[in-house]
Length: 229
Image (cartoon, rainbow, N blue to C red; front, top):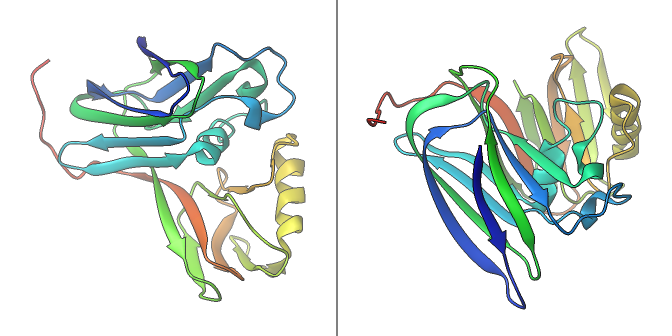
């Protein structure tokens, strides 16, 4: 379903779009992209994407890196090379919800937004942004994926696998294993760890400097409030 086309000129711009359902996916298409796109960062996507559901709060809080990373959560072939970014929001369409989509785009942007749903849904795929202070440990568990826009070799990552094995990793190990497991050389200066098969029981992350972490996990709606369609 086509929702809206966003065009900007010499200045960045902010928009709000309201719908009465939460789609399974939001899709963004960059009309200026020429496929195949070699560098995913050449795709124009929202620099800010915040999806809120009345009664349940923020379902998704993204920057541009998180939008691009979300496009590679459920696939072994990235859509970014074709000029598309696809952001999963739920396990299917969740009807009768008041949904606000707040967006910001940079200069000289021409992007269309679509809503796509293949299933009936009951669970949000919530993406939340967390700030982790330097040298403070953060345990990450029960997650579908997490992503860091920035990282350093001095960061320490300790993984507990579902098998019981515990391993302290260099961040480059995680990137290499992610590319090996997904068959995608797609970690363009970000650290993205997917846990679709729940092989990770817990990850402890100690950054050497303050970082923003984006965390995806399934959560049930808290509110039963509905609106008439």
